[in-house]
Amino acid sequence: MSGELIVLTGADDGVRDQIAAALHGEGYKVFNVPSEEAAVASLGVMNLVSPDLVLTALQGEGTPPLVAHLRANPLTEDVPILLFANGTHEERRRALRLGILDLLQRPYDPEDVLLMVRLALERSREKRRSGQGLRGTLSMLPLAELLQSLEAGRRSCLVELSDRGRTATLWVREGRVIEAESSDGRRGEEAVYALFLWSEGTFTVTYGPVLVPEKINVSTTGLLLEAARRADEESQAGQQPPFASIPDPPPAPPVELMAAHRAVTLLNISSAYAANLIQPSMLASALEESRQKSIAGGHSILDAFEVLEGGQISIRGPASSVEEASRLISGAAKWLLDFFARMNRAFPGHFEPSRLVSLSEAVRDDMESLGFYSALGLSGKDA
Image (cartoon, rainbow, N blue to C red):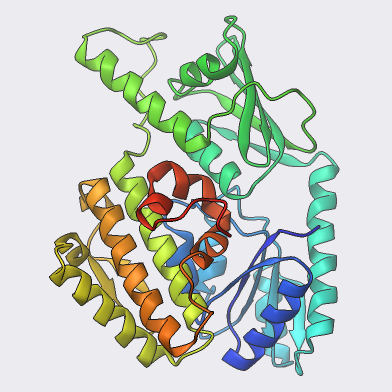
């Protein structure tokens, strides 16, 4: 199955580049990053991007940061992980203690790696086809976060919810809610908006093909923003929402927070792409020069960002402190366009702005709905 997203890190640049080229040739989307820290930063603390498979290595002591990040979320804890290994017994024991069985031994031949990737992904698909799914409570994993994770992982599944005699069903195809109904007679988008008010109860996710006709054509981000708008209107009007006896759930992520996380994701994906061609110190310098130029051009909101030594980008302080989504999106777009123009002069044809669409394919719906592509002078069809 082509199009699956693979995170590739934990090996030397030359090895990663060879393997990335082989994976691209098989139709996989590859997120090739120089370090686990960069991968974790790009996937985002809100788990808004979910890979189908990870290639990494055991470095230092304890659990690798990327493995810990995936295991912390019940929707990504079963993502298959392949480890680059040196062949020592202690390394094997560490991997087993982490529950990882697939080790790639030196020399890392791209054909061998491709075979192990195919086998690991097929086992993962078979596990989903066999009806295995996910169970949990909405108090531990609110519906908004559940749907965001399903969207990031492009999962197809049936989500069934239950709370004190009330029931509801959501049909999700490739990460998008396409139909919904609840026991009170609501259907479609209206059923989804009512379900965002549920803060208690249980859910069951059953993975597999979804064959019902599509009745909802709004992205998950669109559903979240509309639900937040409705909640805000009801609050201002002094109206109590349905099921007012239920404690209010945490608010849906505000657009400023979504924009901040998506900006970090896009910037780090672009940085990781450039890392395939230049050294980390030169990459960090080029990114910082473009940031400073954009700030001098009137985009002072970029002061909220920081370029780290290896070329990774982070936000100074919590993402929730970044305000004014439109200014942030405009500033991030200006930064990226200047950086790509600078890189394209050194590597002609490799850094056309349209490449940003294919690089951000895993979060394309959000890029369009938040206005990133528009600010870049692109559309989702420019890949």
